[in-house]
Image 1 (cartoon, rainbow, N blue to C red):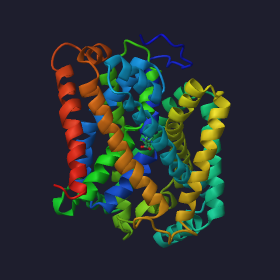
Image 2: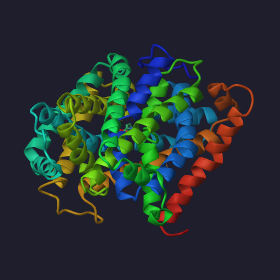
Image 3: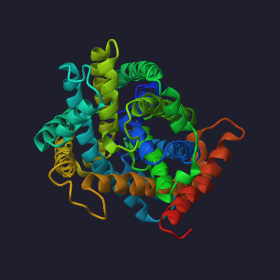
Image 4: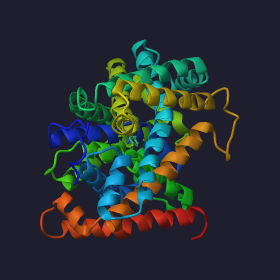
Length: 453
Ligand code: PFF
């Protein structure tokens, strides 16, 4: 029944291409910019443990489910939910899940693009030697001056959005595969070199201690929610990004194995970023809870001090921008795929409209760091509100619904066929995690945060 309507979808050339693209989506600012600063804000080790548990028990099973739903329908998230609901004979309202995903993607991209703009600006700063021999105070000064200027932030945000749109217009599988293939190993090597520098700071073990020695007294229900939300964010789950990528995945390829690979690579990059950054934080008497500016206030110190730091600084920020690009295209792709497949838009028109709307919304984040820094909604700046709404609420709710759909609504036979796991424990374990463990964990964290538990 899945092939009754013609699809305008591209397809990946191989399993490897899917792994690259999905890893490209997963690895991004979430790993290198967000993971360190939220770990710093939430007290370190205990937060990291909760995050790792969420990746394993909630993230990986949901990644398998989301990829499976996409591949079964080979459509955009809204049509996927419509088709699969029909197939399962379930209530039509499930397609709202697709809607929420598309909206969450655009909301995330609106601030993601602003931060990716920061990284782009830092390529230039690295190039002009701004960090050369600069101490922590000077580096902080550079950052504060920069985010205090709406004009500069708008310029770089616009540039990044434009680059995203240009890539998305061409379709996801052209160029992207190559970019990621080269990016991942290089990023990995650069992170290792930064870890090498961190070892020379004299505070290496203090950094490791902060990251890996849990102090559970520092964990609040909100930090647990943040850790769980981040597991969704960093793996690109709960909003249809991985579903869309799954829909381009040829039949007959093992979904579960690929999910482990992607989640593994994603986690390693985040941990390496943390291991590189916290020793620099402590060695320079900076504060782990410095917020979204953390990497911009720490890593340039390393680039300014180490031999070869000039080139490394440039390469690092270039790679961060490319990593952000391979994620941003997956944030906008669900909206574009839907406009093209369901609304008959040309790919160009779909990109322009979704890109423009996202760019406009991004101005809210730009101003929240300067002219509107005093504007608080529910005690949060516009940036913080968008981040909370998407990462802590929309993605976990989306993921919860995906788990319920895959575990309870979809016929067992269908998920078993689609996943095609080797005989033995693999399928029953996944089924247990997706039907009970993942949704119940999300549910309990929510109950805890609203104070019911
Ligand atoms: N996973 C990306 C990161 O860690 O930077 C961000 C992201 C991409 C989140 C795609 C959600 C998404 F659907």
